Structures are given as structure tokens and as C-alpha cells.
Image (cartoon, rainbow, N blue to C red; front, side, top):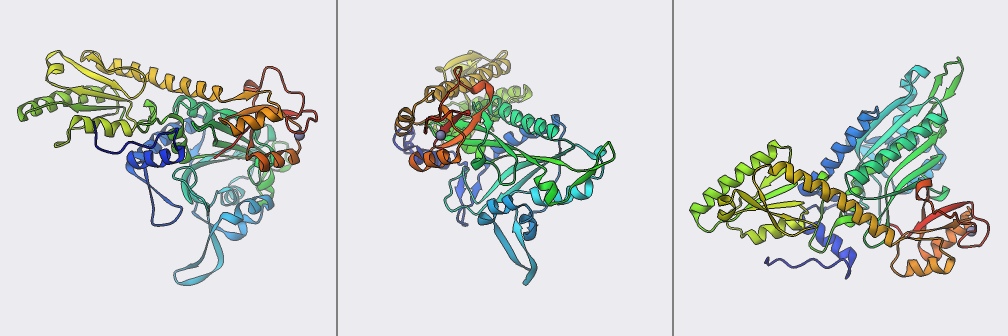
Amino acid sequence: MADAKALTTRATDFSAWYNELIARAELADYSPVRGCMVIRPNGYAIWEQMQRALDQMFKDTGHQNAYFPLFIPQSFLSREAEHVEGFAPETAVVTHGGGKELEEPLVVRPTSETIIYSMYAKWIQSYRDLPLLINQWANVVRWELRTRLFLRTTEFLWQEGHTAHATEAEAEEETLRMLGVYRTFMEEWMAMPVVTGRKTDSERFAGALRTYSCEALMQDNRALQAGTSHNLGQNFARAFEVTFQTAAGGLDHVWNTSWGVSTRLVGALIMTHGDDAGLVCPPRLAQYQVVIVPIYKTDDERAAMIEAADQVRRALAAGGIRVHLDSREGMKPGAKYYEWEGRGVPLRLEIGPRDVAAQSVMLARRTGGKKEPLPLTGLADRLKEIMETMQRDLLETARARREAASIRGATREQFIAHLEGTGGFVYAGYCGSPQCETEIKEQTKATIRVLPDAEFRSATPPTTCMWCGKPSVAEAVWARAY
Ligand SMILES: [Zn+2]
């Protein structure tokens, strides 16, 4: 059909497949600066759809957007002890500006807790100023040594929510609310099922009281941390003297939360749904949900088919569908199909003279189902129905795949065998000791992804630690992770 070389298959080399898919779909490219990436228009369009959906969800839960500086005084980072220890090794530092050495070096933000809470100290006086619910869309820089497009790059795009509350209970409620927002987004928009729960202390955000996470399982059965939400307690409020007058007339430190997701989600999307033909994009996040390809032999036919196709395009756009007409000349239909397939477009419509005569179009789905003719009458509504089904099926397929790769109540031997074999999530008992956690990581490269929320826990709770045999304090989910 097309002359381009096929992608390396997922089964042969998942990592090569991932890189080739990104190149073919023109999602991102390597940059002249090591470790940084260029997000190309096709990749950025997916990020924009993600942003739009998330931004609305943040606003619907009472948050406002603001913007804080890229540069942070270096001394700010050291005010919270765990925070500086966690982030100092990977910061980029500006020492010169305008040809002169700076009095105090500036850190290029790796995350914005410190600069934001230094401002909150000015803005918050009384309990009437709380809660303060702010989100920022920004870029951040973390000096990574080993990078991969979308998954781990030195600079990446993200959002970071930062809130301040009067009580620990309110901060905890907010932390969990935003974890829930992320989960809803991942399931309903990305069609990516996640396991939610709390991180152990060793995986906790530097400076947080408690960290919660959404964990997804990629097609190579490695886990990916897709979004985190932190209850920061009063740690940063103490470091930056963010105090408020309580309703009772006393003085107290505020309780903070922070939460974020990044362009890493584009990588998660690729590795959740992509197949050996390229990207598979869930309809709700697709740049183009429908692409129309006109089919013709002669110049006369060409004009007529493009006119007919454009009428369909206008009708679908009016129906609220993101649609593109591929009227490029000098390119065979097969080559166009191949290209749009690689880019993950959910639906393709072909329109030729026979279709026009029959007042219909030929529909090809990116996943799930053979080609079929559809009448022009009621086309937009029919396509929307098909996309809703497709969106649901993608989620269910991904969930079934994850469950097939998950084992529960594993013994130490089963745990090791599973990780050495197909890989995936392992649910098992955990004694709570950091020593077991470290030993397991060193010997198997698996980490505790989360101590899962109630709905994900096994029906029969484990009684002993899978590793050391001591009593279990919590069920844990392990996997090798990105
Ligand atoms: Zn143990």
C-alpha cells in the first residue's frame, strides 16, 4: 500500500516502537539542546486538548489560573530541608545576567512551591482569605541525565496547582479531590485506567506530608506515574511564614496542597493505546476526529469529489466534530490512509463517485470494526455515537489488558516470577518497613507504586509481607516503572 517502512513491532522492541511512532506521527523531535524536546504541531495539538479539558475541570472545582516567575532565588529552595535535598541535584542555576554576575544565583524552576508560597505569605492574612485555590500552566526544568521524548525530558510543560487551607482536613479533602479529577480525566478523556492510592515515604514528594498518585500500566507492562497530588501539611507554610488569623482570633500556619500532571501524559497515551500501525488517539483528545479523503481518477472527478467532500466537512464541523479534509494533490489515497492511521485519527471517511451517487460515504475506523458505508443523512450524529463507543471500548480494552497483567496475593516466588516474566502489577502484603522496600527495589527493580485505595484492594486482604513474612500492615502494588 505505502512505501514507507513499517514500524518496529511492540513485541520486537517496545522502546524502538515508541520512538519510531513519535517520529512517524510527527509528535515530537529531538532538540539541539541535549535532553530537551521539540513538541511538533501534531503532538502539541494533543497536549492542547488535554489542557482544555483539565483547565475546565480545575475551574469547575473552584480554581483560578495565575502565573509566577521562571526564576527562583536559590536561597528559597533551601528553606524547606527535604525539598532542597530532593531538587537541588537536578536544578539549572543562572549565575550571570546582562553580562554581570548576579548577587544571588537564580534557580530555573523545577517546581514552584517556594516562589508561590513566598507570595501567599503576602496575600493571606485572615481565615477569610482561605481557601486560596490557584493553578499555573508553565514549563519546568529538571536536569535529567537519561531522557526519553515526553516521558522524561529536561524541560517539560505541566500544570501545578497550589492551594492554601485553614485546616488539615480541608487540605486533605482538596488533595483527594484533585487526585479524583486526574483519575476522571485519565479514564474519561485518555481512556486510560489508573490505580490510585498513597505513596510510601520513600516515593513521597520532597517536602510533602502525604503523596497520592494515579498509576497506569503501559503495554510493555511497566507502570507509569501519570499524576500526583500532595498534602504538604504546614511544611512550606512554616518555611515561608504563611500565617493567618483564625476565626477564633489566634494565629496559625496554613495547610497547603500541590498537584500536577505534565506532557508525560502524551507519552502515556501513546503507550496505552498505540499499535503496530502507529498512534491510536481516543476521539475526545484527537486533533482531528475525522479525516475525509476524496477518491477520484480524472480532473473532472477531482473537482466534483472535493466539492462533495467539503460539503460533508462543513456539515460535520457544524455538528461539533473536529474534521479535516485531505485534498492534497499528487498523493494516492492509500498513502493518505497510511499517514492518518500512523497519526491515530479515529475515523476516516472516503468519498468517491460511487459514494456520491449513493448519497453515502465509506467509513474506516482506526480500531474495532471493518469498513462500512454510512448514509449522508444524519452522518454527524452517527459518527458521534461511533466515537463514544470507540472511546469506551479503548478504556475497556486497556483495563482488560491491565487486569490480565496483574496478580494478587502473590508469594515472594510468584512476585519474582511475574516480574521476570511478563511483568505487570503485583498486589501483595507489605510490612511497612523501608528496608524491605529497598531490598525489593535492589533485587527486582520493582517499586511500590501505591498503597491502593479501598476500591482497588483485594477482596481477601493479605496477612503477611510478601517479602519478609512479617505481618502485613497494608496491601501494596508493585511494578517496574518508567
Ligand atoms: Zn517486609
